[in-house]
Image 1: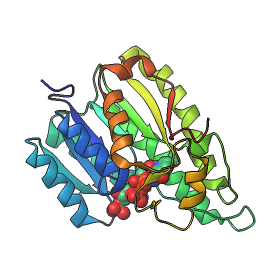
Image 2: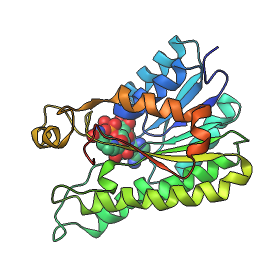
Image 3: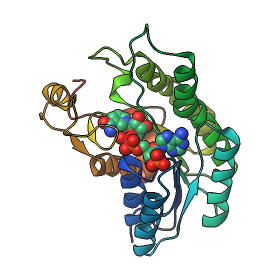
Image 4: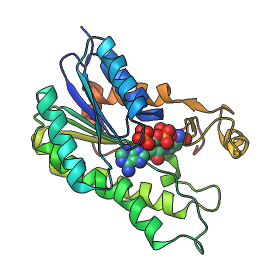
Length: 246
Ligand code: NDP
């Protein structure tokens, strides 16, 4: 028997990168997994097909996390199709970079809508379907706690908000025996942050191992937290960044 046998999960932004790896890993551990995406319909469908190939249920739902109504409807649709919701993974994200003189109000609103407001909205929707033993797992960033380069104030501020949100969720949801944990990755090879990208060299230099992680490395930690091991980590942040913030 696998650790997540019979559990049900929704991963936002599951069509590519870290989200796709999490969705597939949760399924490999036994869960039925839905995922959302905004534009990459083909890639989302491939992830769902791969999950079905593991013998699990899956569905890909187009839903912009910046749209509260669409996100709520996606959570409800996932819970209905899978028969409840045990694990919510708030993963969808963007990577705005701009100096403080240049960042626009539109960028601020969209970034906070996707990184922060969406976590409130998806969590509220998920809680209507979630029972004891549930998990709210949110993907933050190691840049929430240290900012080694300029141009990151907006991204870092939005990811820092998740530290307070996760602590608050732990207090609100402890009585329901639901755990909330924040996962803070460092440099991970994805479309957002390719290991051969322009700024990759500097990121390698500040990593203790001198290398990027793979999406599957983050997925392994998330799968661990989705199981029994995550319960007493509620309210905490797990930084998986190859020693970058050490
Ligand atoms: P990618 O850009 O590779 O993938 C982003 C995923 O999020 C895609 O599935 C995309 O869907 C989806 N997405 C983007 N915007 C929205 C939206 N508005 N609504 C719904 N889905 C959306 O990013 P990563 O995999 O690298 O990042 C995943 C998470 O990890 C993010 O929260 C990011 O901030 C965080 N992170 C990443 C790090 C890294 O080095 N890669 C380091 C630290 C944190 P679609 O395919 O349809 O566009």
